[in-house]
Length: 88
Image 1 (tube, rainbow, N blue to C red):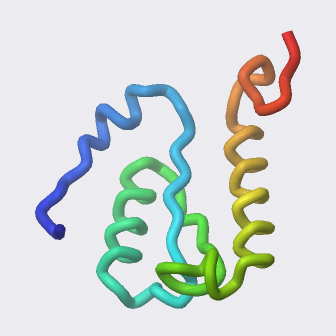
Image 2 (cartoon, one colour):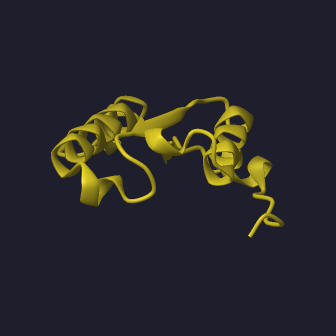
């Protein structure tokens, strides 16, 4: 649907990092362009994954590595006490 407009101010008000992702083989397609616009409005960039829409099927090993990297990027942007694997 091309009519959906995310509430960017609400997303930003959540105070949590938001990673927007897209497939490298889909750069010229509308969903990737929308992802790029959203990432820009959120003050970031698209995290590009190998393959297209279903890169997890066509490039599973590379996709998993990129997913882990994205999780590390996400964790690095969180306060230490809320990171994955943090102990109290």
